[in-house]
Length: 218
Length: 218
Image 1 (tube, chains in turn yellow, red):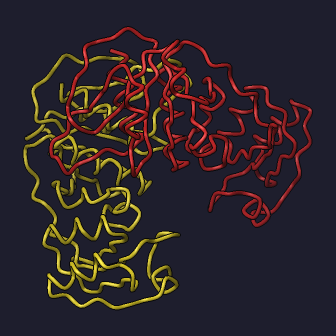
Image 2 (image 1 turned 30 degrees about the horizontal axis):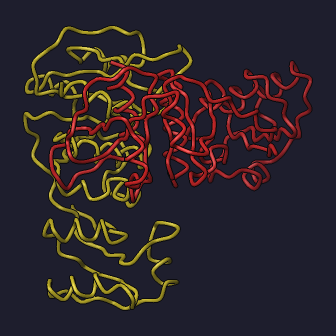
């Protein structure tokens, strides 16, 4: 069952159009010449709306034209490539930012069933179009990842540094408040901790994932 | 002129209390025992409120008790320590996330006059208490930074890698949409670009700042 996704603003719309998505609805204001032109080239109809209607149709507080809906792309097939595994992440902004970073670093992104929807409007906005340029797939069970990937758990403490291991990596990133469960950590081949200045400090989940991907790419 | 700041939720309240801030108002729900206890120890009065009043007083959509106001701490004095310079950043969530990362990595944070307020409620929430454990100061003019710091411009392209230079660093991070102005880049001693997989890709400002701080710390 593939639902509809909401594409808000010129950058997301343009990324989705370049990826070949077919739009169900395109709402645009009269002065949004780029969208009228682009939709014309694609042979797709645009519904002219006021700023007020655009706002009502959008999830963002201050949307920019256009606001479009499209059928979500097919989920990618799991593959033995470097992949960030979102394990119970709850913040759509963090999830989208991680998808954006993964695309920039050439990584895939996968989610466990208890992770926020990766195709919701906030996640798409934070992804800034990267949803359409990287593999996004689902992990029903973390235990099976070990067959194809070197599984690495991102933990804030202690500063245990595991010896270098060959990829492809499955980098586990946990929930913003609770981190990774102990049962999940025991499935990992190695642990990665980002050195921090003080014991009370912590990193935002998307920043931690970004730095960890950078470290594993070196 | 030091204004009042809004502290929402137990973690921010606790970080502010540990930093010795005096609260002007503390609103807490009846079942928030931790806050009642903590305020009692501090000799500060708590106003008992309903969930509805707590929500009305808070900036967050779903605030957790307590919601408190306090006089903003004095701004830190500029010092020759590694510092992220926010140059025209407009997103309070990004600014707060960068403050959180800077505190974790032992860096200061400074802002130019055209950067979002670092003490607004969204920035404080994203900072997760780090505002009270790191130096936060103002940069009236980037040209003067070169007297005390090695000034490094973070740029998405090209992948120019400058030779290693001694710190302390002033790491310039630009606006989310427009990056750093050319005039600002000419003030820098060196350029740091984070390698990316494709030319169309980009990083979120807070993730770019986090990876750049990590690189300079190595």
